[in-house]
Length: 528
Image 1: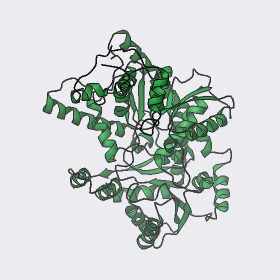
Image 2: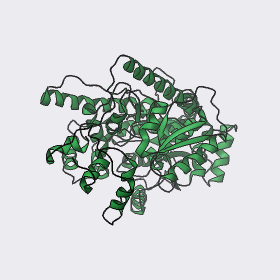
Image 3: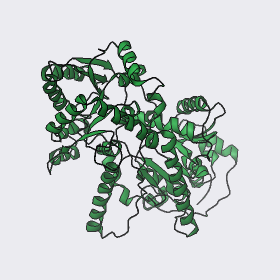
């Protein structure tokens, strides 16, 4: 596949760790799926023949180059190790992180000067302890206005702003702080490739074909649930199963399709036992989520897509986009990014589905937060406990399901509108241009700050000074920086290195700095 972009290249250096971009089929995780999809879009639509990446290992570099060649046979890659990341980032001007750790890298940027690099992160889940700690560090880190944290949804941005505001308020109270700089917080959605979810076939005949291939009944009305099967961190299926069981009596053709991967066999067994108990009359068709080749066909075979996220782990949600691109009407919870992607009747744009109201009680999560702070509760069980207190309106859920089950023209209209919406707003070739515009904006901000003298010169951060600054008080005397004795001969140096206590440090002789001069003193080769 050749590069399809005719626009200017991305001035971007990627922090390329495979864990963020390689969507392992045996363990599908949302952030990896999003990262993999972004990487494909960057390679296909970014316009770069030459790629700049920073890699933890050589294997990561090889993996990226093979993937880049798949998108563009002329692609070339310049790989840099983590040690010299700033050199690579300065050459392009923008350093992309596949996570929200902008504060951490802002400190690492200081030796290169903060006006030389824009840092560009992105949010995924915001509920993890580690991520919340990262956000709390923004207010005291050397983050500048030419940095950015991409927020994938309106709700996600509000969450980030809330963390920043609370930390800033604390610092105002505790230390009298008055000046805070935030990164840019643009809302840029995740994207998909719509061509993966459509064919030139007539939808009805395609549905019949896919049902035959998947051994699904031709005359049934199939409700599809797709995604990770985890009632701790995705959604609690109890309300959906109860609603389907109630509706089954008046809709005997109603059946459920579940396509996903559970965390382990124990959780999958609980899903199956729970479904049997709560919806005993509803036929259920189970498909493994790691079986990706049937992903599109299952959507084409179905009538309604349902996703009822009810916990803080979800931030954007890619599955409704895939459903809309496939021509399915969406019945989703009115939650996080779903509120951006799925439009319902009465809103300013044409509807693509129905959103079910969600509710929680003020104070939810206090005990869980204390337990997480104390280290006695992990993220996953904490999220599971919280989701128990977040309600997806059961009455509205049942009404929404009934409305879609009973109205085929409505299902068709919503599905077609969903396809138009995805093509217009969530096709990666459209979304990637928002990234391009963001990088251009950050570059302009950075260059303007440099011209106005608002950047700081290269220096070590206060949390990691050199040893003479941090621990010079330990020594009897700290020699002046300009102290430059006559060096010993190379033979003398080599002789002093020739013992088991010294020969491990061959790099010593590759530098003419303070460490080598101090070693001369240690060996008695020069006088103070």
